[in-house]
Image (cartoon, rainbow, N blue to C red; front, side):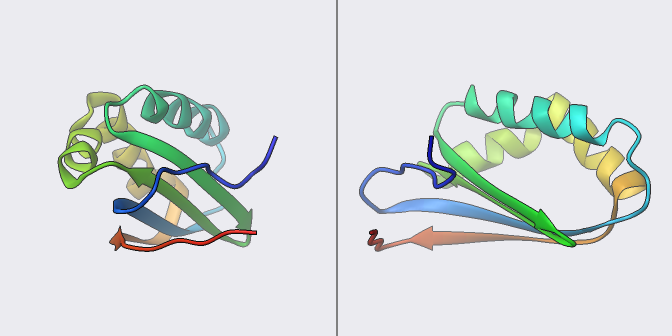
Length: 105
């Protein structure tokens, strides 16, 4: 299984979440796994890629901006965002990009 998301032909959107963690791990792994599972069930979800080695980068792919907004407002995701701000992240940035072209090997 590839760690690289399989996405449709562009255009689509990418949500790029870059983060630095605090030293608190309580509940983080379970919540992160739950969010990946829950995101995959959302209309418009296309895939995800994630890496963490000090700096964490998670890129989720979505069909359109409405799908991204719906995910952002999901009640479980809202709670995870709050815990992230309060406990797990010392800094983060979320960027939304419109993917117009892609190529692969």
